[in-house]
Length: 290
Image 1 (cartoon, rainbow, N blue to C red):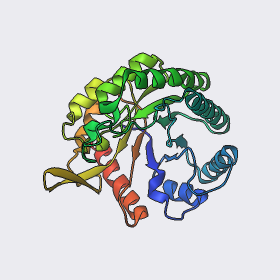
Image 2: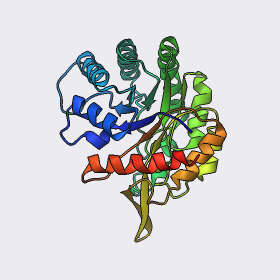
Image 3: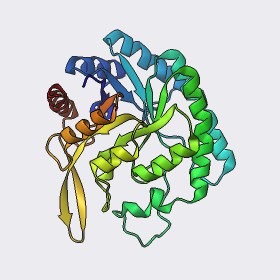
Image 4: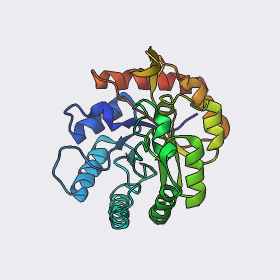
């Protein structure tokens, strides 16, 4: 299973510069980096940001440049704000595609908060798709038909991350939205690590089969489940040590014909540069087993 291995930029957001990130990622064996669409805490134009990424990637020999969050917020009732968000997204992806060879970008359509304010914060079924109306689907579909047209024009794909709090938090609502958008350029970024936070999560097999043929990239991470009172808290950990069998996840993806990039994340605290080396070692070991 020879697929591009991508480092999420959150492994190198502890003061590293963009050139340092690119050099380190290549040295550790990554094929690319998923950068954020906006760099945190830096006053710069999108053009200046992407230009710096493009230069650093070329200098380091980094093969793949992906862009992720923040997403395009289409969950607001304000039609003018939705229009502005789409226009900003169209501008960014056109501009980025002219500067780097995009393959897949990780996208989102905005967060949907809990309608039931009495629901506890750890009840992820109460927000995202669990709080969505048909308007949320309509707004997201309208916006991403336009954004998907840009992706088709430039020959890359967009992949909705399955992320708690968003319309695309679980496989079934993600599939529903993709059906409504109906674009070959728009699919899913299956992040099962985010689904582990749900009390009623689909199995790995159910997640892959529900989005079969439309999984354009995946995020890998892992967590330990710790019982706290009447609910479970997820504690992030290395890829090979938690409740998610990422070996099985990759086997299911391979059987489904998945051919996109695998992006690993290091959201836990501590020395993330070391975590990046740990996690890619695990991933390469699993991939080498076939």
